[in-house]
Image 1: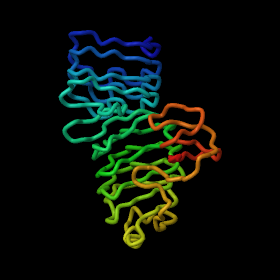
Image 2 (image 1 turned 180 degrees about the vertical axis):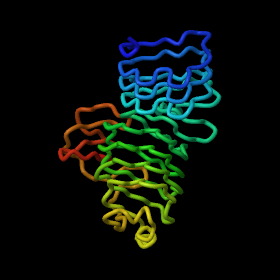
Image 3 (image 1 turned 180 degrees about the horizontal axis):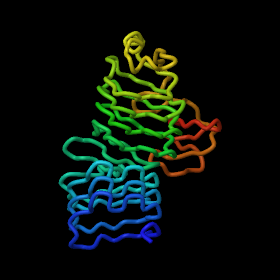
Length: 279
């Protein structure tokens, strides 16, 4: 009957959640972790598709690889204050390793990556098929293995000048992804990083360097960046007061009835998603 369990409480006195402890509990909706738990094992909550929220207590200082891998339903992630290893700075809705400034796990819809993050870890957003936008901050240096693999509704990604490396399969199965990369020096890549991408926008002076790189040259089209392309903040500057779209969202992912002055996230009628500034 384990597969029917919807709610789990890890009681006080338990110090660790073992590897694979709740793996594939597909109906699991909520987990309460007591402040005595210090570690979560590898794949402990993998494929818990109905799990929508998780709170990491201040006592928990060791989260193993793929602990929440393919838990596609996660919408709320919080680290309690006082945790010496992890944090959710700026209410970012994610788990960040404090010392390395690495985002380890994001949510499926409304994570806002802080500007202080320099790395996106392995599997941070893997399989989030409802993810339609993400803001990559300036200063980001690396993107880990499978970080955005399977995010097939993501229409475009903007990579900053600071980017140094992208690991294996980071954007695999992101069909029709358009990539805007501001790095003048070609970032190092693993294998099959962009297996379904078509158009790559790069600095004009770097086009030949990208075309001569084994992985980046797989793009069907490599073209020069233009002034009106999305910038590394992910914002597209549109100087108009009326923007017609299908759905409108604030920067933190909340649904709004119409665009507001300032930054908006708009799902257009053609299915694409854009970040726009309304003046």
